[in-house]
Image 1 (spheres, rainbow, N blue to C red):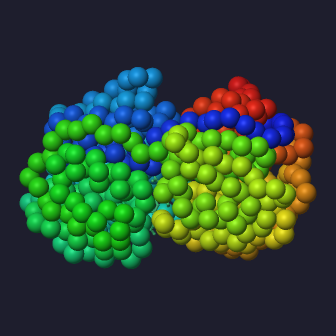
Image 2 (image 1 turned 30 degrees about the horizontal axis):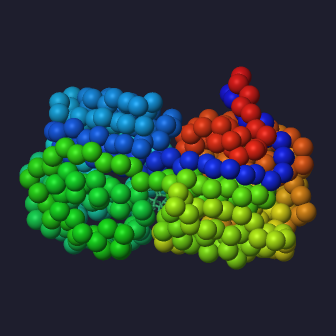
Image 3 (image 1 turned 180 degrees about the vertical axis):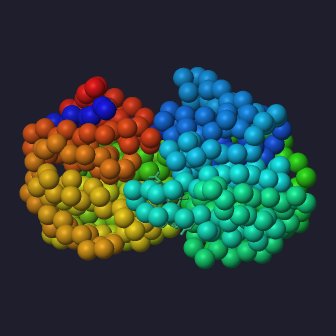
Length: 421
Ligand code: EPZ
């Protein structure tokens, strides 16, 4: 298993291009199942999770080809041969469950393996099934698989979600595009990835309004047609690299970044003493004079502070002046980076969903282990400003959500290399 060696190397400067969003692409790709006609995605990220979704769609009989060095994904599900998402693929990536809604809507049946346990939390699918049942689906759990059927098709309904789940919103919205009548989805998730999905579905002929708000209305249509859609910028990759100059000093411009994607995050950076300026090409980030200041953070659904930036923000606050309190409200087990940061000399006290971080002058390099995608990159960020060398092992976690990490950080002056093994 590869690892990454990072050596603290002082201030950074230059530009980092931000790729298309993993979490948008993972819901856009299953949308191809809604139509016989081809769907093409541009600005797609080159990540192992995208390869897994490709393998899943191909296992259903869809044609999926990647062009232009992987940044264009051309798909067609004209002749599907299966409606079963197999455990062997689903257990690798939970987002595989986003084929449930589209398969059910187009074919009236779907068999999708439950993903099973995840490092950051239980992550059940009850909000997905409740929503699809509200549209008339019959869903049964058998041998670890959800067997869903709607022999007479789905019917629009008014449904209020108990929690604004991203994945459940995506599955229900996709299913409702081909349902008879109108669906009103209340307490829907408002993430930019959902807005991007809806923009693509509208290009395919869907009739949807209210995306980005907590009430989405979908008028079902008989058929959807083909389209070409550009994947939105990855706000989590953006936020991650915005923290590099914040942690190390210097100034970095994030190409393709937009303030509207990272509002709540920028508010916290501002309070911590980090300047963010919008430029013609993206966002420019630099530290204001002096030391980073402690801030309190609570993760929430969009437009609140994203849980996917909590670990990276903790890395910044490890060397802040004062004590910060981080509350993780979305996932029940998302502080596994804390003991690894503690190995680098951080002072972190975790009590349930609350982590109290008392800033130290400087972290020290150490061998550390990645436990999940966002935890892995928080250890790399910490290593950029630590004294000496940090070796992050199990970086396969990182490859799921970050393309070209070493090249991108080296490009702004970081001392970083991948150690193959
Ligand atoms: C999406 O996961 C993202 N993944 C996650 O990013 C992200 O952390 C999460 O949204 C929250 O922003 C993708 O888009 C592929 P949820 P998702 O359904 O859809 C509970 C990353 O690092 N819940 O909004 O699975 C659930 O257990 C990943 O890129 C139910 O209880 O998130 C969790 O506590 C990690 N029942 C909370 O809701 C359900 O049926 C939020 O989950 C569904 C969810």
